[in-house]
Length: 310
Image 1 (cartoon, rainbow, N blue to C red):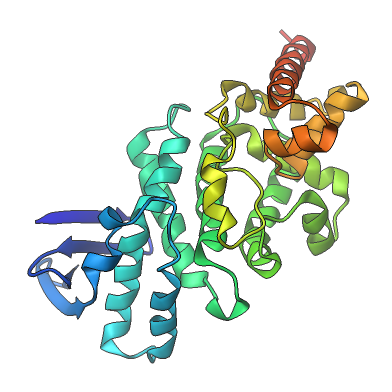
Image 2 (image 1 turned 180 degrees about the vertical axis):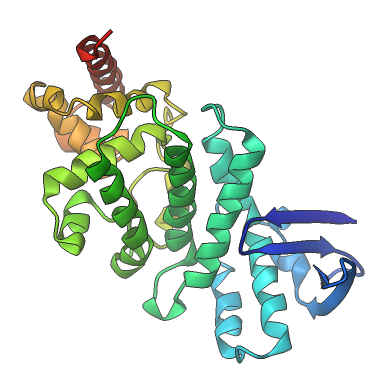
């Protein structure tokens, strides 16, 4: 028997596979500390199991949300179906956790945080808006992981106003992404929050100091969201991206950059565009954009460190 344990304050659930193909047994701890079988949910598991599905193919998830919405909140099968959906989507959360690995936090912790984000995405997803679950889940899960990194500490002190703005951005991004059908840009967020575009851009630059290139890509939503995981052939985890948080502590340095370098940073971190998208927009090669980003971030870090008191 294979068990998957999700540990967090609001959720304490064990999902186990057992019995004949097409069955799911939902096990929960009772008040006496024992484990009981709450419900057995029968589904076409052989067709929808993660093992049979590609990691970026989640078009089969929406019908399950349709079934979930049709059940009354008191229906005993509702929670079983919800947990079945969560189990089907666990590979998505684990994939995102892997893309953030190697950044100073335990991989097991990242998996737990990403799965909490998945639970939030499942509970908040509104099928009636007409967008895919994937286009909503990816920014929600990533937002939880980013928040975890931010809460874990900063290499350089970030202004309180930017941290507070990041919290506001995180709270509105999932719903705004679903409403727009794509990842919101800095302009979208500024309009939603009634905040200056430059403030939003600075907050996004700081927040993106922990992101990796491919899963942070802006998408048009729908079926394009999964493709963002593989869009850039050179979009592996870039260690230089974590250096942006140093630059944000001395934001005036960014204003002193040449126009092209500032524009590349704005497109990458302010509008969440991939290197490929930036290259097409500026008429340069993707490799050239990569070199500009690496060089600019490195220079910003060096200048930021020079400006700090010994």
